[in-house]
Structures are given as C-alpha cells and as structure tokens.
Image (tube, rainbow over all chains, first blue to last red; front, side):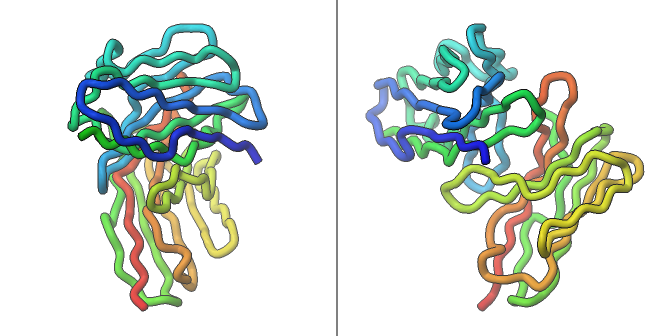
Length: 114
Length: 111
C-alpha cells in the first residue's frame, strides 16, 4: 500500500526559532499534498493544499508567512513553522494524494514550543 | 469551517459489544469515508462509500451511505481491545479532493 512518512516524529524547539517538517510519499508520486494540524481531542484542521511546483493554497485564517510550504518534488513537501510560539504547539499531519481521490496520511509530527 | 456532525462524541463499551456511530451533513457528498486514528498516529482509511444506499463491510466493520448522500453510519461488531481509538467520518469534495471531517467518536473499551 501507499506509504507516507514524516520527519521528525517529535520536535521540541524554543520560542522564536523555526522548525521544518518533511512529508514524503515513499512508493508513489503525490499529485497533491495536504497539511493538517490537530489539537488534543479535536478533528483534523486543514491548513493548506500544495501541488508540486506551484504555490500552496492556504485555508482561511492560516498565515502563509508563518507556515511556509514547499512542494519541490512529487515525493516531498515541507512545512516550516517560522518564529514558533507556544500556541503553535500541536500535532501536524500531512497526507498525499496520487491520481485518485484517496489521501494517504503520514504518522504525524508532535511539535512542542517552549 | 464546514464540519460533519458526528455522534456520539465518545463511547464506553464492554469488550464483545457492538458499536454504532453516525455522521450527518447539510451538504451532499459523492464519496464518504470512515477513518480510524490511534494516539500519536495519522488516520487510516477503513471504508470508502461511493453509492447512495451502499452497504460495505471490512471485516467486523460495516458502513452504509445514506440514500440522500447526507449521512452515514459505521458499525463495529463484537468489539475487541484493538478497536480502541478515534473514528472519523469525512466527506470528499469533488472539486479539490479536500476532506470535510466529523469531530470524531472516541471508542473506549472497558476491561
């Protein structure tokens, strides 16, 4: 089956620093990648949709200058949280879609900003 | 943003019991999906529904797509400890392949 990896799985950073999270589709080419964040006991909230080689489309209320998304290839997308603050602490999940409708989810990255 | 109405929010059941949860939407979806998420992991697709009225099974799981395409239920028969987790329904938007999520049903199995 289609596998999506995320790295790192957990990261702790200090307030004001930047953190990069990688999302890779391991055995298929991802036409589209999605980035979500999830707070405890809540559902997934879509942050942005990215297509390879083009700018990401951000959902309303998501700051594109704070959450930088780069979808440089058909197998890799990165999310950089810039100038992180404690309120950015969350579980970040990516998913990837090939030619069909199904999104294959990564295992998530737990970000803690101290 | 738009969200599906999913209930119940949580369920405390005994091992061996059957489980039922459902989702409703004010909008029509042509594809309805059920996912399971375990702690610290991403969601995993359980069942996908494409046709109105469709009843689909995956092992002990059974899901049905409502005739109006605005609702669905998921049943789990004879629950076992590994069924613990959060179950999400999601509707697929045809235009951009985005998923509209329910709030989730947390399943807890009492020993």
